[in-house]
Length: 504
Image (cartoon, rainbow, N blue to C red; front, side):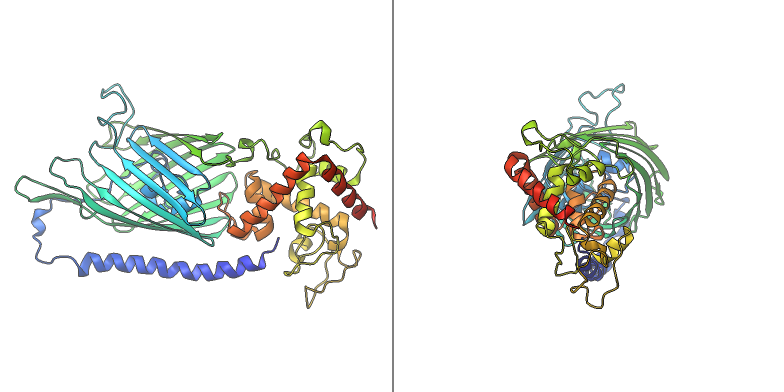
């Protein structure tokens, strides 16, 4: 609920990101022109290609994966995407023989390894024309070691390793990648990536360079006008091309359609793709149909899973988390508490409020405990007040009467003057606000709780949370679990809340 700090940090990081873009782009231009050998015979180079695009999910999004990379394959597109991981992730792309593994080591950051092109042939399992799976030309080997971490709402990542081209006369050469992702609001995310395998080349037996590879600098954006809708786009500046894709996400299923336009005469001028992904129980399946004129194998398939701790990618993945909530309907029953924990009285006002707003008693009590310790006139250091610690602006938006204060740290504690200090009105407004956050964050309890604490301006639709947000979530979840395991504590705090709500 305390959003003032979020605004300050956002302004600072916005100006921190711009120099990063400029520095990386300047470094690219310096290396490209100042350090190039002017005496090198240009006739030796027959073609100068872009680094091959790989990865089922990224290709499904028509190369527009720069600002939305958030799994173990992220380094192939933007290493900064690794910073979004909360658990270990492993993905194997069957069509392209690519193994990706990543694991967050808190608070250091996330480390990743990507090994490309394990397939014996250019097809998956069986090298036969009737086998539809496969697309990555055999021999485009890469071995990448990556690192990424969050700095506020900014994600930074780097990769290094060795690569080679699919030719017997291609030697391994080092490659370097840099990336950044910045959330300007819950609706807008911008990413950039710089990729360099320019040291890789193909030579004839006499040492003449037949093919080399361009460095690449690209920028991507993701717009989320609605929790179910995402629009991705990207532009590759150094190898001119444009990509755009439209994605619909509902629960564990997402579908996307996209198109990629190349301005390079050596590649197809236009391609399109259809993609599907399914994520549930910590497992993922990705499928893409890729329509490019120079590809014989248009079907791509990959599988993945998360590991290392309780899976909490969505509410339905975690039995400890409440079922999804809708603020537009109150017909769904509140999750049942085990019989031994069900309070004897069914008429308590607190229970009625919880049922009406479709939230479990344990979670409601846990939030009140962490926010105010059941003190209806509590005032925080940021001016938030009441049971659910409502800031004045949010309280007014929810219909509460709140005066204008010269000093918000010294509000009028009369509930008739400032309705944040009317315990019942405060509680109801707080639950309505929390339910809106749960809808906004696709019923992900962790993100909704984090946004309730640090403000939705600092939490992306798919995360990650700041350390402060994680601390708050842990406190609420731990208290909720105490209520679930200790009937005496549950009943005692229910009585405390009843006294507060009935003390008009």
